[in-house]
Image (cartoon, rainbow, N blue to C red; front, side):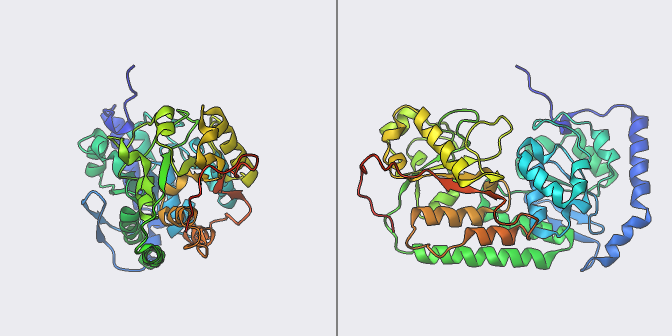
Length: 402
């Protein structure tokens, strides 16, 4: 089956149309709206270094940002009080991944509902001219897109027209790359003090976890299951990146490290039964297909526990796993490792793996701080949950968790 070509690999059509788009972009850039730059702190123009090591010149604080991946909005929620006001458009809407979150944010910022969208597919085939017609003054890409963008028609046009673009990264190594990405965006957007305050919070919370885990020898084995029930029942996993980084830092051991040769490996249900985990960590979300385990806006604790129960009951042999029987089967919002919220996920995982050591951690409060109180008050939903222990069955182990 042939794959749809991504928008950055498409060749340009009509040179005349392209010139008209470029001219429109230049005219917009000369409009009085560029006076926003006068209110921004710091000295402009300025140069920043992105996560690909590229040095990029920015003439003024960007006011028309294009997001090549909708979940990049999460980082702007962290840094800006009114992030939607500085968006020119996005490759496809956040509702492709999480309709409930998109609707909740649109209640706070109605302009999000009419934000220009170049596709409704998560694997978009987009027109370079359509992107230029939005007149962005900054394009933000995920670092994972770099190999497809470098040398592409899109990159060539952006370079020729003078539209800067940056690579950020929050997903692959969240604890390592999030501070660098926030620092980059803080400088690029003219909000360095906010970025530094967030990074300082992350450092402090991370140091507290590291201190309390000093000398801990008992590290539970954790099965990481990415979006179970969405594409496969069991068990897409991480090795050496993503949640695997968080599990190791939170005082656990990744079960998949015994066998998985690559980060995106899928473990069989039979292999898991033969190597029973002490803890099961599932990612959850508001999946468009309605499959899998739910978490997020509008989801209750009962919803999550019910989904986990259904999942464990439909996997042959799983009701006999100690992690299932004894209530150490958890769900964590998938977006935590798709945005700048790795420290939130780390705190929640640490509390699950070592409840006595981390009983005073408050990941809810950390999450609210990182969201910059972005219209998501407590009670709107649950971003994590667990499967209650099966009271009708005796425990299968006597493992003590500290």
